Length: 112
Image: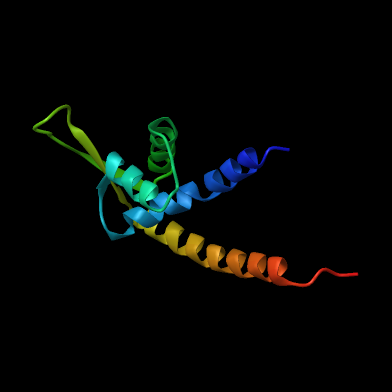
């Protein structure tokens, strides 16, 4: 078993949560989202994020607007919908519960 595969699966499992969390304070362009993820050492490539943003939009969690760019094609800015805000609130509660449970498991002494 390769550790890199497990680490990648762990990152993928929380990527949606991270993207929604980044957008909780307002809209963002895709490269802004990627930069925010990169700042916290959560490396994601464009080929991964675009399908995920589309899936979140199709699920009604995100909306977007186009803005003309002076240096290239128009830009798509994403933001949370009200449904997305409620979804994120539920994810936050689930994350807190999960984090507490995992921390408890990994800090307990082994059973004999």
